[in-house]
Length: 309
Ligand SMILES: [Fe+2]
Image (cartoon, rainbow, N blue to C red; front, side, top):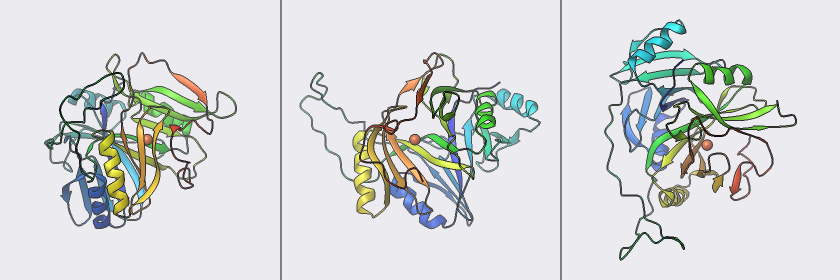
């Protein structure tokens, strides 16, 4: 058993890498590496490249996860009949490559956090009616791409929920934070899972599994944490001004409590900006609630038709 520390990157196949890079810059990522057939984009917090794409028909390929030590990588390679390799793709560190029951590539990586963090403005100090935090200074920011600080989570549309649910708990050490059911309580239709780091607090979900009758495995969406609420809102305005395709938002989710905003990339993939998410640890009381029409958001504009497509 290992416990992954966090998500590292998402990996897609994308038909037009130039158009994708242009969109991702507008979305708030930064250029990292480009070859004739691949694209790597980085977040402002550095670390691993947060987004990897290979040229080809649009398709979700897999996800990378950070593991704390080379020993853990060796342990999992031995257990799952794989091998620890030098990570040639990222130019340093090590990788174990597995496959989940849906056939998505699962990279477990260690030691290749080579990208320096880039400087960003300090998060805005917000006054509220109860607590004043800003004295004699102003809040002034401009409309520009959001600052994507890091990749936060991925939501997988699974065709084999029971096996996927077991894999992400047993192999990656994820733990359930909250889940939804439809009809009877044993019919789980969504499971939100956090990294099993015992008492250490981590995102409410790093992986979520959707069991809603998908015929093809893939990503529902991947989600990137931005600097703060104003950064998300300015990014919304910037993307709107640049005629990018909006999906749904701005709103506040229920499970995870994030302020969210969803966009569609040129290949039609759904990508999320979020900020102000819940943090949980392994002592968090696991929730199991019925899936209701208002289960997705506490407040938001009406759900867009494409969102659940
Ligand atoms: Fe999300």
